[in-house]
Amino acid sequence: MAYQKLQAREALAVIPDANVPIPDPNTAINLIDAGTTATDGVTAFEVVANAGSVLTGAGTKFTEMNIPIGAIVYNSTSSEAYFVVSVDSDTQITVNKAVTGTATDTITIYTKATVGCTLYIGTAGDVTVQMAEINGNTVAAAAPANAEVTYKNVGNAGLLPIQVRRVDDTTTASDIVAMW
Image (tube, rainbow, N blue to C red; front, side, top):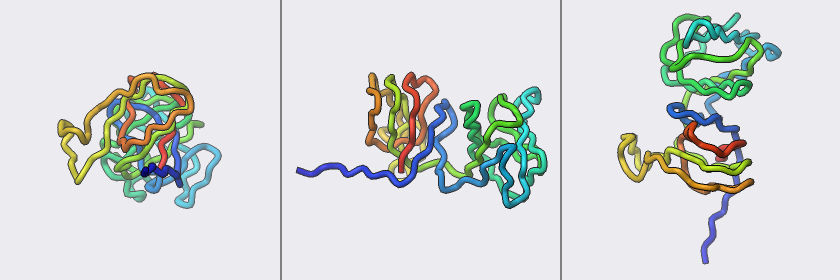
């Protein structure tokens, strides 16, 4: 009898969101926080919450970093995920929704979404996911690929050995880790 062998080499804490896919961890541009000095000179990333959906960086070089439209922004401190709508200048990017957080939040920018990953569920609950694409199928309405599916009552320390692109924010489970 055949068995599935699941041995992950990489992992990333998932921030559930209705629109933002799970990023590919190999495409991280920078880990940006007040205590990190990046090679491109980024030393702080200030979140201007009162500016709606604009993120402002102190000493950043967003245009030089070639951040593409659709890049994924993970704020792991406030557990918020965004995607880039426009790169306005070296110090400002506009994202898809109102931002939260402070200047000490840890921000990571990823250039691409994952094509599929498996999930570890730390704390039990329902998990709603968008299934991974299959054979280049990128139409959201196409089935079964790209379908949104809810897995009910996934237990503590549960593994979902399926390929997913996104975890929806209606998910009641928590402490979710994407694995590749």
